[in-house]
Length: 399
Image (cartoon, rainbow, N blue to C red; front, side, top):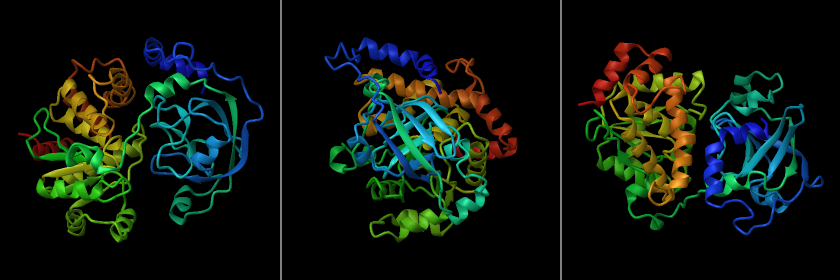
């Protein structure tokens, strides 16, 4: 990935950033430092991270930053098998376009991670399994043998984008105005969807962000009878339920009675595997009675795509889908069109619009005037879902 390609694809963002004086000179900050050939770290162990795709590089975020690396730097990542990311940004969030590589220090990660945003699993893209049977590697938990080295290209190359996009949220309930906002819980009531037919939220079983018990109480009160779990498999769910802080009795009851459909999806929404799992999930949901819940970990990325697809399929307008998607960013980060239009526009363009174009199959489609339901049906049919299955699924959800 070249620096030129990043800036071409991010021209709108750069224009916004410059207009709001995120440049070093306008904001009174020091100019980017020149390249520092001595700033590097070599021979670090790596670990496959399959859920979102990518490679953990086993140095903690704090340790890495203490070396002198700063969010917004340009870095080179070299793996010992020769696979190299020549010029990638170092961010604390996924602030690159779909399909672009980055080095990321996401809050809550144990280590820094190299990844391709919404793209191919970097483990496979870089051939880091080195001939091991991939399924055997994953099932047997074989040790990774490659190492990674990171070199600074230039301080501050991507600092403007880092500052414009930087967002984070909290895991303390008292910081949020309601249980619903904290749990990112809401009814998907757009288009022809029936009131109370389907909900979306953060995870009711994975309590890493302290939200699971709140989600569980909300879905119990709403009578949720079937859960589409985009994030987990049976092994992970078993670990959650065995943990000392597990307090989600409604989820547990549904899981034990077969009311939870675990799909264990990653976030490469351009892959055939991603769409195949959606078809499997929708087909299974159609065989069960609602109300339904769709969730992943945060109810943001995988949930964002799947709920967008359901809303397209069930008659949601472009604006309704945009409004529902962006509620998540208001819930977590306080970002909306009034409070922070700059970040609102960046998130909308980089995330939801990219997802909708994927469903449409082309970036030339006018999403505001297109028949979104027809596009969603065509997407599911291409992925292997039969028309009769689609109809059965929508009949469960619509008026």
